[in-house]
Length: 114
Image (cartoon, rainbow, N blue to C red; front, side, top):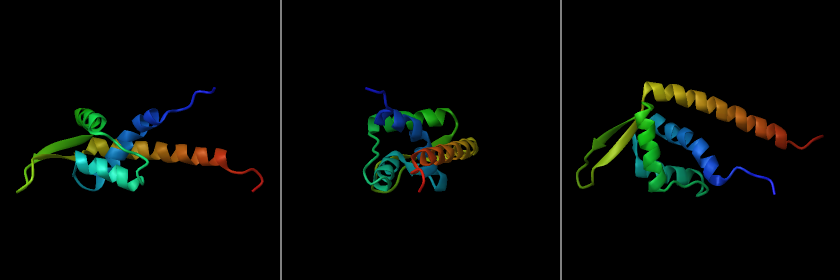
């Protein structure tokens, strides 16, 4: 049997791109990021707290996102993440590489003679 890329490996490779993309427009907290990924993927991609928050902390340590604690009336304290200038550069690069990859896969999958 051939070795294939597992769903877990795929998630690891694309998780940074997904998170950076979601905090590009505006700051978001972890739970919101998780729910948006699930909603926009139609439930095909999910991140559990155990894997999402360590990734957010890693992106923050790299300087790609910046977190800020916010307390809103009647709600618990949440950490909102926003994209940094360095994160914008990384996102642009990752987006470009992802688009090239998808285009290459699409070329491979094209039906010959169609």
